[in-house]
Length: 281
Ligand SMILES: [Zn+2]
Ligand SMILES: [Zn+2]
Image 1 (tube, rainbow, N blue to C red):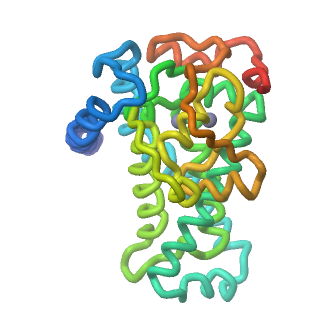
Image 2: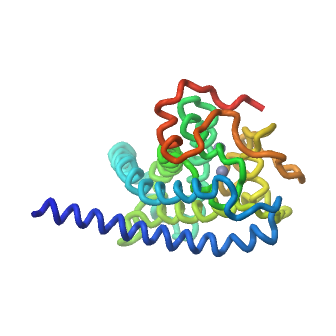
Image 3: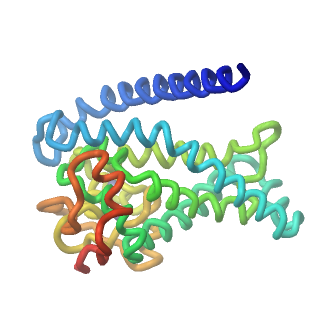
């Protein structure tokens, strides 16, 4: 009886999460479809090849990432609490909230940058990250195309630094407010930088990642080992991977073989023969 009740609650939780994901998807499509129509880098049909696959990944990750990210994040929080002096982590926790949030965005971005860069440079991680780079048409929903292992790994890299510096400490009664905000803002911005929108932001492209900045990260040709930052291009300036000409990439994708269906992409990192990273530029 208890087991049946728990199973029903699980189903209900998934239904609610599925409804939330669907609502957010409608909002994202409604917000970006007009921009991608009127300001496209290159005109494209909304329902271009790969569109449905992106939507499939959107729901898979919407339902799995939070569950998969929870246990390792709790482990990191516990390890930091056990290993680091409380005085050290308390110092960051005492900062004014606005300062703490800005610091958390920067520190989280350092972790994300290296997690993302390692996902390109380590063949084992590239097997998973190649799924995201398999898109040959870059639009807002390509942001959702990513293997759960890849997404959890790069997010965890950012969260480890947030917890280790004490910036993720609870805010009043909200134990995970700062990491949740950092993930939420980063996720929203990630949709924008994938959009098929030709806007250039001038000087601000040095401060905040733009579609052109991230589109170059998806190029099929030269310079695909650049622009790893999600929000702050200064990371690529500091670590020597910044690349942002006036032109747009000619073509997108990867030379690593990746299946073109959802189940195939989900299983491929586990079953494919060893692959090297996409050939260097
Ligand atoms: Zn990448
Ligand atoms: Zn991307």
